[in-house]
Amino acid sequence: MTVDVGAEPYEGPVVLPDDASLGPEVQVDYPGYRSTRWRAPREPLATLPEELHRLDGPVFGESAIAASDNDLTRQHEGEPLGERIIVQGRVLDEDGHPVRGALIEVWQANAAGRYRHDVDRHPAPLDPNFSGAGRLLTDRDGRYRFTTIKPGSYPWRNHPNAWRPAHIHFSLFGRGFADRLVTQMYFPGDPLFPYDPILNAVRDPRSRKLLIARFDLEATEPEWALAFEWDIVLGRSGAATPLEERS
Amino acid sequence: MTLPRTPSQTVGPYYAIGLCRRYEGDLVPDGIELAGQLLDGRGAPIPDGMVEVWDAVGRHWGRSGTDDQGGFRFRVPRDAVVLEALVFARGLLRHQRTRIYLRETEDDVLAAIEPERRETLLARPEGEALRFDIRMQGEGATVFFAH
Image 1: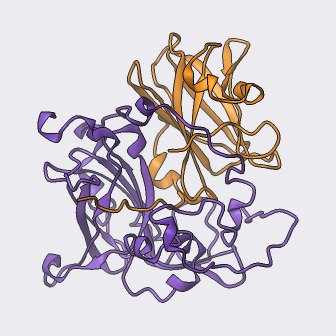
Image 2 (image 1 turned 30 degrees about the horizontal axis):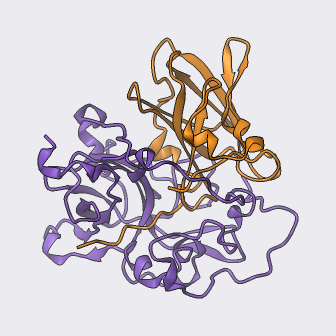
Image 3 (image 1 turned 30 degrees about the vertical axis):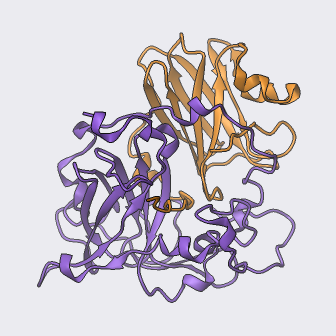
């Protein structure tokens, strides 16, 4: 698939200046990410009554999870190539309460920057020992933890010589329907940050930092794996009922 | 104490690896088929999108990736009136929220929308099934809600 951005060439900057007033909101019509051009809604958004912002959402239990889902390095006969890492953290609501039993789905490129997907034509090798997908549930303290390999950066055709910083995709179901979040976790110190329109579509620099994991020496396993910590904060739509009253 | 929320990022083109490992479009086994196309502002199919629906009354959930014609497909409860729906795609930095009305009805949500745009939220019968297209932009653009 080519990245079809329409007839009009985009001549503007790939990355716009910071704008702290936007807070955690991503700018959905960010022009430097060219696929937004024909896909981001242009009409003003309609409003929903308050009760629809507070709907409960689907709940997934242990049955959604298979044994190897929290270790992406053990889903095949052999081990994948790459730098073995542990990714862990907590899922919290805006009040700092843990979100328990949240379903997290992750997916990523392999160490060479290639996804196991028909559409990915990047001429980097596939790894027969790496599928790149995992599933987790947060525990009573909102904690999650999985083992994987560090994904590679890869080129994409958004603009000339465009490369994505290394990232892991995260999808989360919180307590409330409105707490649904799909996002990406980045690795500290990636030199590609200033050039990436997807990351920089979060124009508030402090909010952007929330997408970058912290290297966590304490959590590393000596002689085995490096570790990164990344906490995720969801909305509080499900928090109308105090946490203590939830089973 | 209020913690800042983690910002959204696009699902990208490869979401199926993580989110569509198997078909999860049947909310109930014997439901009525609800199918449609996800279309961009030029009317072109969005082949790398995903729709999630939630029947908040019956507590049934499902999702469907789109095919190369932008097509998605569910089986939904025959007695449901409205489904909450989320749209994900490459090019959508945050998912969009809409509602799919499975039959004509009146409520506060519809009443707050300009009459000429209300029909974008109404599925229409097509044979034994229901049809609901989602247009991201342009003429007949689906109403999306702030969320």
